Figure 1 (tube, helix red, strand yellow):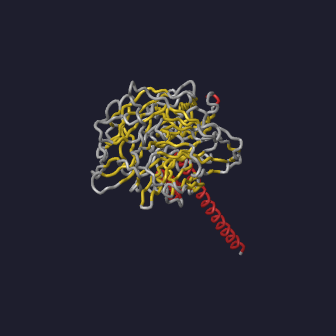
Figure 2 (cartoon, rainbow, N blue to C red; figure 1 turned 90 degrees about the horizontal axis):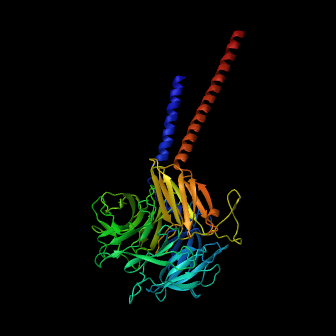
Figure 3 (cartoon, rainbow, N blue to C red; figure 1 turned 120 degrees about the vertical axis):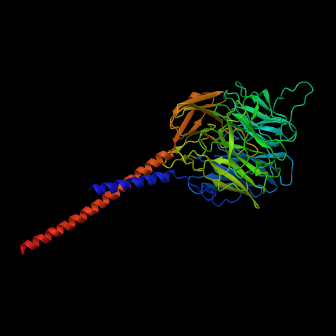
Length: 610
């Protein structure tokens, strides 16, 4: 009996260890292109949004030399992105895509900026493909455009009516707001007030391309306007009282570099050091050929060089790619932010090229790490993770974050440039440790009773509350395992032009902290609502309706089990299976012994009778 228990315990321990080890194994085969894109082998990823309101993020792609706009619907089974409706142009190419609700019907529309195939001009014709209960209604290129812009416009909500508006230059180069109504009529045109320039001074011209943004920069939960000119950035504060008032000019931020032979990249906004504020992160080339590249971070007063090392382990020097006008993605030096390793600090995805040796171009992950050599007061920098996206990345010209499996872990979409055009690739982020997160989505809160009623798999009616909204600010506070206070902030969809490829939701990495999120605050339009004691690994959908009464705002919470819970269930299930097998074996053995004993007993009785 003792020998059997020893064997049983040994088998049980080995099986449990096997299950745990299997759960902890770091998968190397991270290429999930076929599982994600299926038979989609060509296209430019242009934007993200939930077009069909099924709580899965869809992808807006440009195909056939940017003459076709197609929606790839998100799904929860392979393939995770599936071909949907499309619109085709014959004499024009699409240069920009902005998903949003432009008519207030609570359904997502798709705005496109197009230009003639042979044109090199920056004046674009703006059309909207209206969304409806039956899907996407394409607008013909033969119709008169809604408006014309010089450069790509920025999406915002000027008057806080939850209908998306636009900001940019009109065809004459004048700064203009286009304010859309809750109907499909031409937008109201409103020119922006000129910034104070002094007597006989010329109003600075807006740069094309630019990094204009719509986000809260002073912490009052009102989205402000960030405008890039040729010489500096302008900051216009949003009006806290009357939503119909224009933005108020406040100050400029100097972005000039010593000399004139330099390239400025696209500014991106992220809480660089988890201080609860959005820092301006700016990639810079000190020479036109980008032979001397670095990243600057604005600390609230000045830009600071964080001294990123672009030399790989083989001593090959890399740099940013100088702007290439005819390339869809490389027209600007673009960084895209997201928390890849779920430690709370934003990381970057950027495309680099070699300076020495054979010419190569590749997209890399830049991880946010502590820094001892940085200029005070900054204490962090970015480190290029040369092998983080292996075996993918070769000949890629762009990358963007995307949550393929809706598990709160950011994966990566890479764009490979081939002889035939652009091909999307999918890289799954398989963390080898259990990290926690909070995912927040802020919707417009609009409802349309004419929309078809959706049902959950259990038959319950599913209510939809509009589409994704640019500008809301989200902050959180939590306590780490060491007892330290951790806080962070983010803004939803602050940028929408020049292939910003920003997700319509925010994911906060919490590291290995399993504690409750002490506080989560969502604010827009000078109003805010605070929720406390939230469960980690949860997705929160915020419906700010009515916008002027935050106490009535709704928050729907969905919990995603962590890998630790899944691993525990697998280990427990494996243990139970082993016990059941052992009981079954012992039962069969006991039945066999009983049968042999009965046969022997019958034989002994027969012998005695003789």
